[in-house]
Length: 163
Image (cartoon, rainbow, N blue to C red; front, side, top):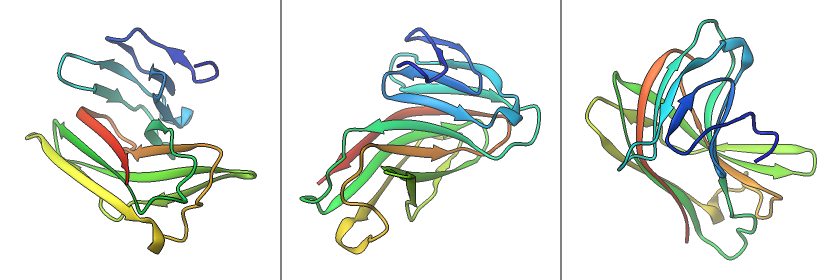
């Protein structure tokens, strides 16, 4: 994936402001945060992040590219995930849709709460009632906005769905 920053081997590596974990999954952080740390993808987990921030910044997010450009024949768009955090972490999930002049963000109704014990989280948009989501987009991403501070987060599974 060119243009996405550091491309890492499949099992782990160092973190920076832009790191690609696999072709459809990457971390993007405000360079002002001075992000460092490590990531790994051990067996049975999608991703483990040990993020260190050294300064204030505006955003820190995990992005998953979605192959969901046309929503016109669907009623539901959502995701299911399982995660844990060393301490409680509140994560704000968002659907980002590419438009001709940039993108549109639509935040899911519920926040993800990651705690030391792994928990499941499911959330979805009922598309006929969610007018802020464009029915057609040139690209889409599921964006998980993380706290802009040092943290340890284990993402066991993340599965978007379209019904």
